[in-house]
Length: 240
Image 1 (cartoon, helix red, strand yellow):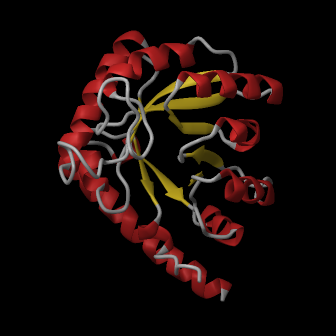
Image 2: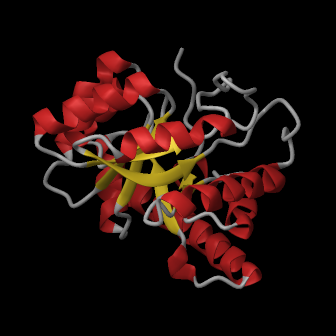
């Protein structure tokens, strides 16, 4: 079964790699400008090991209760773990123990909690501010994230917090509002936010956008990281 699964993942990974390479070529960008993050949520540690053997070094999870045991089971591997889900403050201590990058920073209270946990763990955690393009000023997005006009304040807080490093920005293509169904326009808007951010924080140049269905639009807009789950791992059968 493991051999079958390895062959399946290898074929899927090759297909995604072809898509990223083609999107980079179409955008006139070098392939090495885009990092593939494989989202391994709901899939077992055995898949993580297979993917590592196939050369994947960036993996992402969105629930601490799944991620923590998986990261522990794969602690012998050189994996850069990304946490991409909405993060509750009561999970921060656990997440700061294994996540190298937290992509879903969207409120000041979370920055404070992450900073304290990272310092206690003796680690430096890279943080991306999650931008909600469907949120009005002062509001949070339906899928987490801060409204675009709240990015600067959060970014400054991250940059000034011990144990944290400001990496850049992340977004999820909105399902509602003016950008629904207009992924490339949404991602271009994120790039505008990134340009403003880099004026004050030049090293914060990560832009995480795009998933299985819209990675081409993200690459065209200028994303540095794409988060792909289904296209690599397949569709997980629903439990029950």
